[in-house]
Structures are given as C-alpha cells and as structure tokens.
Amino acid sequence: MAADERDSPLRLGPMLRYADENSVSIWVQTHQAATVSVHADGREWSARTFTAHGFHYALVLVTGLAPASRLPYTVAIDGAEVWPPPASTFPPSVIRTIDPARPTRLAFGSCRTTAGHDPDAVAMHGIDALRSYGMALARDRAAVHWPDVLLFLGDQVYADEVVNPEMLAVIHARRAPGEEPQDEIRDYVEYDHLYQLAWLDPVVRWLLSTIPSAMIFDDHDVRDDWNTSYAWRHEITQLPWWQLRIESALASYWVYQHAGNLAPRDLAADEIWRRVQAAKDGGEVDITAALDALADRADEHPETYRWSYTRDLGDSLLIVLDSRAARELQPERRSMLDERELAWLDDQLRGGCDHVFIGTSLPFLLPPGLHDLEAVDEQLANGSFGPRLARLGEKLRQAVDLEHWAAFTSGFDDVFAMVIDLARGGRGPAPATITFLSGDVHNSYLAEVTELGRYAAQSRIIQAVASPMRNPMPRWLRIAISLVAKRLVRPMRFLANRSARIGDPKYPWTVTHGPWFDNNVAVCEVCGRGLRLSWWAGTADDGLRSVADITLS
Image 1 (tube, one colour):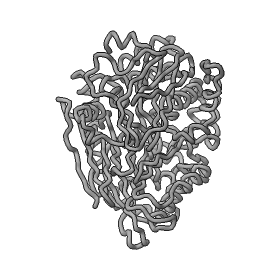
Image 2 (cartoon, rainbow, N blue to C red; image 1 turned 120 degrees about the vertical axis):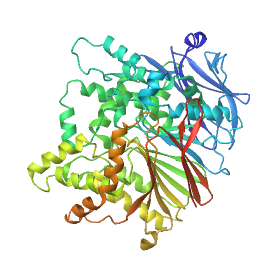
Image 3 (spheres, helix red, strand yellow; image 1 turned 180 degrees about the vertical axis):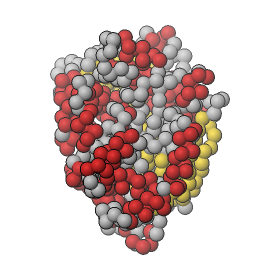
Image 4 (cartoon, rainbow, N blue to C red; image 1 turned 135 degrees about the horizontal axis):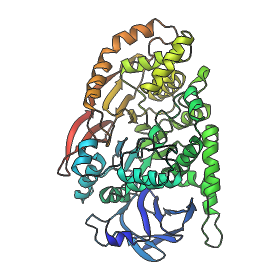
C-alpha cells in the first residue's frame, strides 16, 4: 500500500455491492466516525458511518439512476476525496446499473485463501484467479466483457485454516501461551484483519470497487464442517471459545458481506439496518450489542433470521441460498433448509424469467457416485443399520466432508420437486434454463439433468461448479477424487438399490464436463435461450488461460 493510502481516512473499500436498474449500494470502512459521500454525474449521495466493535462503516445508497448507467464515481470522507487513490493506474471505478436489454453475464467462484503473490506463495497456493481476472477486466477498458455481478460462493476468508504469516502474527500476539484457539480466528477484531488481507490487494480492491458483487458464506468462513450434523454441533458447542467464534463470524459477516447483498426494500426491513437508520442529529450509531445479539440468536434459532436473498438481473433471476446456517439437523428430519427457508424458496421459484440461477455454496448435483455415497452415509449415521454403523457413519461424515445436499435427503427431494415443477411450467412460463451455481469442492465441473422429456420439463436443469479461486487440491487427492467419482457409480448404486430408504433418484443427472482442478473463476453468459459457460485460470504474466468453454444451446 502506498504512503498516501496509509494516511487516507478510507480503511477498506469502496465496494460496489447491490445493483439493479435504478440503484446501487457502495460499502466502505473508515478509520474514524465520518460522513461518506459518493459523487457521480454531478450528483452526491451521503451516509453517516455506523460503528461495530470499534470499527467504522458506511453503506451509501445511490438511487435515482437510469438503467444501463455507467458512471465514473469518486468517494469523499468529510468532504475530502479519498477514492480513487491519486497514483492509481486502474480505470476509473464506475457505478453500473443493470441494463435490461443486455444479456446477463455473471461471474462466480469460491474458496480463496489469503496469501501473497511471491514465488513461495504461488508455489503453495497457486496463482490467484480472482486477481488475474481483475487484471483482465482492467485491461478491458471498454467494459465489453465486464460481468453484471460477481458472485462469491463462500470461503472468501478462512477462519480455521489461517496460512497468511501476517494474520498468524496477529493471532499469536493476542494469545497467551496455550490459549485456544491456536492458529484460528477467535473474535471480531481478528475477522476484521482477515477481511483486510483478503480485499486490500490493489487489483482486487479495484475489481470490487467497479463490479457489483453478491456473497454468501460457507463452512470455512466459520469453521470446517460447520453444521454438518447434530453430533458435530453438540461437540463444537462444548469448546469454551466456540460461542465467541460463531458470534464474531456472523456479526462480521453481516457487516462485511450481508448488508451489501440486500435490495433496498429488504435492507429497509432488516432489523440491524433499521438501527443504523435511526441515528439522530447525524450521530454515529453503535450497533455492536444488537449485532452480537442477532448473531447469537441466528445461530441458536436460525428460523429467526434469513441470510438468503434474490437479485433481479433483467432477463434473469438470481436466488442465493444459505446452505449452512439454515439447516435442520435433527436426525429424524435432516434438511439443508428448514421449513421457513423452504417456504421462502418455494415463493421465489416463479416462472416468467428467461433464466433462473440458484447460487448455493454446496453443489446441489454431485457426481452420481458421490451423491449415493453421501445418501448411504446419512442412513448409516442416522442409525438405520444399527448403532455401531451409526458411529462409523458419523465419523466418516465428518472426516471426508460427506455433508452436501445429498446428505440431507429430505431437503434435497423438496428442492428438486420445486425445480421440476418450475421446469414443467407449473409456476408460470418455464425458464429456458435453471442453473445451480456452486463451489466448495475444490474442483469444477458441469452436470445436467437427463431424460427431461420423461417428466415434461421445458427447462434445462444444470449444475455449474467453480472451485477454487485460490486453494488448489493436492495432486494425489485430485487423482483420487477423479478415480473415486467414476468408480463409485456402480457399487454405490448397488448399495442404494438394496436400501428401501434410498432408492433411485427421481430425476437422474450426469456429469457432462470435468472435473477440472485449476484455480479459476467461471463466467456464465446468457445467449438467447442458451448459456455459454467458461472457466478461466490465471497465468504467471497476469493473463488468463481458458480451462473450459461450453455452450449450451
């Protein structure tokens, strides 16, 4: 960071977050209480900062814009311009509203560790695909290939697998010898530092200032296997430091990621945002107590707060699902989404859009053999085959992460039934495609539901996975995953067929392309009634190389 940036009252951001045809929101973090102003097209929009845990933030709502706007903007704090940095070599940051006449272009990915870009870091973590993608967009000054939204599908920060030396030094300086958790994030202050490291890279910072972003958490934002099972949750809550961890994780997530996801109408209804808006006489509202209380309540009673949300992209609808915090974990009724969340999704899945995208951090459609393995393990862990095998099933579930949608059979079936109903035209005119966008599994692939004519579906139903942005799987594990995914199909189908509790999938699917194991960012472009999906990896000279390019016509 340049000296003039270190002296700036702007600590992090600006980040262009929500965007529709007529408005956007811009998130910033400042060093002190202040008034933050956004200037564009001869107009000004301002917001007073709010504070949480001693840090200061503002979310500026920029309204009254025309569709398809592309307006260079600047940011001022207490009247002094702070963005763009004086020495910036990047194109101007711009406010970009949705163009309803332009086909949607959506970029997505997940799983990005925070590390440097020196040879040692690259040798360990690979090239940062997000940074490379940002460099490519910066060179595209005409914005021909800029996406309408950049969707982060979890694990933007790794709270439990801290590898950055600077972050480790912060943790060790704040711990007494032997104090837990060692080498993991503990509280809000440490989460703040983790977000600084993730988003302060100059390329990534510019990218986030000019491309609207949408985000959702996954397990490593909190801890590996977060809410895998009732047994996991019982064990983790016995740890003395866990309550502070989960409270800090969800509180910081609301500030750094969630608030910027929300459309103006949803933001206005949010209980924390209403407190921010209740400021009198221009003072700064301290939301710390309310935020921590919300985090505790949302963890203990997830039905009381919703992290899922939607975005209208013109010709397309994006639905982003919380597939971590909203789970029903009781063994007799395991579901990725509890009843309230399922009802909400049921309301969102309506016809009339050309394309529907469902963002969920965990792949809805795994390779079929892995799907059957997780479904069988769920029955083992639930005790369907006796207590001894139940203990084995639970150990296996936690050891090798058998906790995707397939391991929550009830919720999986419920959501699949909704999607098929939408594809049949039972909820209004059927979209051309219904596409699940996911990450998490550290490999990328494309899957598709087959035999559509058998159940009168008018929509193609697709699963597109992009993972990781920067956290490559070891080579030996890549080979093992590839072999296991293929060789598991027949034996797991045999086992599933022998159990009346599992049976055949109602709607079969197959992996049509992949897997690929590169660090990558994926781009999905609407092409009339079809889609073009491409996966891009970074190169050593800050370029991009194609991993895969697939057209679904």
